[in-house]
Length: 304
Image (cartoon, rainbow, N blue to C red):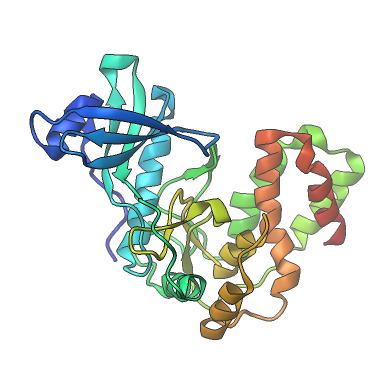
């Protein structure tokens, strides 16, 4: 697999992008606001001739969110295991206040195939088994460049140890940013957990490309009726970190987990490690949204 850095043209206006991608004279005939995201604004654009595309927008200062998202989608796509929306282009519209944008294939949301969850599980397993060569400049775990988890930066420095990577690049930065929420006794428990993380986590049998933010809202029904992945926060790590995230906010149907375990049996003790993996996401939510996530964070630390 070749390195994931992409060279998509960065357009200086939305109209320039539309004309370059779809031909001179193409215009936006209709703009429909799409709800659901809490970081970006989303729109369905109807172009001349009736073609529909999907657009995300944000401020000029947040343009790197879209560059990172495009790189993540490209990394997943290159495994040739599971579908993602086609990346059409990105840029900053200097003519209309300097907002940044990302243009993607429009997903029509067809009915799910009969084996939707089982097929998704097998495809995800295939992605987790795909080669990670070229995804990291050095080391086995991380990614070639930092990206984002939600709207917060995600550190992807390369490490040879999965446990060290997860401690140094996932948990410790989140704990530091959440410092104001913890008292002296909390910090003793946190330090003890981090110091003994190698007694909790296990090294993977193989490194895996992870989606990185694999909750139900980031799995959609694609134009083929199968599961497609969107909004990645990719990096190379332990496959069970992706599986843990699927269980954090409601979980997927039993059929998904049974099918995944059938083709990719999990290492013993996953149910215990699952909370540590999800501690990262809970801390991230604590740092983004506030104290409503604090008690769950503290409960996990106490159990470790």
